[in-house]
Amino acid sequence: MDQFWLFLGRFHPLAVHLPIGIFVLLAVLELTGLLARRQRFSQWPRLSDSQRDHILLFAALMAMATAFMGWLLARDGSYDPVLINRHRNLGLLVAALAVILVVVQRARWSRVYATLLAVTLVVITAAGHIGGEITHGSGYLTQQLPAFMRRWMGQPPVKVARPRAIPSDPRQAVIYADVIHPLLEQRCVGCHGPAKSNGQLRYDTWEQMLRGGKNGAVFKAGDASASRMIKRLHLPLDEKEHMPPKGKPQLTDDEIALLEWWIDRGASVDKKVADVEIAPAVAEILEARFAPPAPPLPPRATVLARAAALSEKLGIIIRPMTVEGPWLEANARLQSTRFGDAQLDELAALAPVLQWLDLGETAVTDAGLGHLAGMKNLQRLHLDRTAITDTGLTRLSGLTKLEYLNLYGTAIGDPGLVALQSLPRLRSIYLWKTHATAAAAKELGKGRVDQRKIQRWRDQIADLQGKIGQERFDANLGETLPPPPPPTPPVPMAAPAPAAAGEAPAKNPAVLATQAK
Image (cartoon, rainbow, N blue to C red; front, side, top):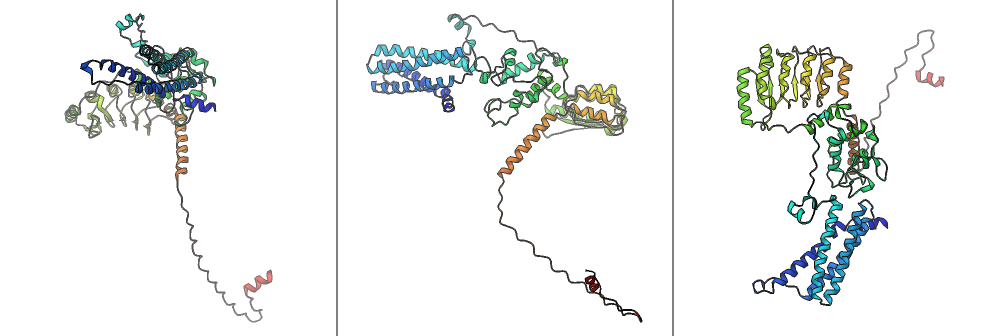
């Protein structure tokens, strides 16, 4: 039965607007009725006593029902007790005033009625203000008061909090203060904050989060997979315990990855990014969060004109990758040793829009690879059969979108693969006829494959396959058995050879077999 009352209480936010609207409309109609006494406004509507009686009776019933629902909802215990008591008392006062208004109107005490209606509207406004604070946080209405209204109401001036200076270098950011806490404020504090704390859990401060909720601690430092907050994030959306609840803005994969990384690294409150181990994928997410907005790309027509001029000058192939947009691919392979570092420097004029670049078999050296620094959107790069070494690969650290790298036939070794650890999206590298070892290649792959994410996807696939199996329909009409094979004809027995003179006649083999039995 308790479950039913809690369910009924959930209708309070919906029902509360009805009595508010009725009283506001009633006040408007009363004002138009006063103005309608003048000749100029004689066409405006005027309420009769009978209409007023019916409106007030309905408003009183709805006010009492809404107050009852609010009382049921407050039993949940997940709201600020001070605010909820004020809101509840004002709600009961509104319901009482509504009943008194019905009595006063029936007695036709017009002056008392007008005064009580005005008082009721004031109490409704106060109750609504506190209801907004319960839902949206303390000071929800007054925090945006203009300066002149703040002075008129005797409110102190707003103290503008000095925003925290966010470092431009992600490695100097404090993980909790600059990354995790802003994320929690945006996604979690609405339901787990000072005004509303579902499950007695709050995320608005570090101390409150450490206390946990009615189910205990929300995270286990050093083990994200065993932390309650992470487990609930990964529950199916339709599950009751999934967080955030269905209908609320959900955390993105990147945001979940940041939370998991922070917890796995000890869930410290004061460590900086530079103080802990960081995977390339997390480094990319942090880079995107802290980096200033990228400048807009040039128009497609401008890019194509510039590409055509460079293609003719350098003797290389430059062509668009799509029918729309400015993205290009460039191939210098046919120029062979005629294309070197100086030519690559000129090609850097197209750096922002290059996605594929083939420098295989050219004269590009380690020094020339420095010209790739501006190619932030590069996805595929061929450096096969060039003179580059391990030192040159350190100049590729800024290519955070690089997915494929061909190093066939180069002098690259294991130190070069270590230099590629900073490339978060690198998924394919061709190392035939290099000095790199299988162990170093395997180590390079470790830092960019999230096994936990892969396992979650496998679990989701298994779950979906189960759902697909449940939706299948099979109509079995029986099957006709295939006809039996034709009998195999007996093999004719060879006639026994005639016995030679003085020999006993040969016996039939079948007879011999029978005798043996």
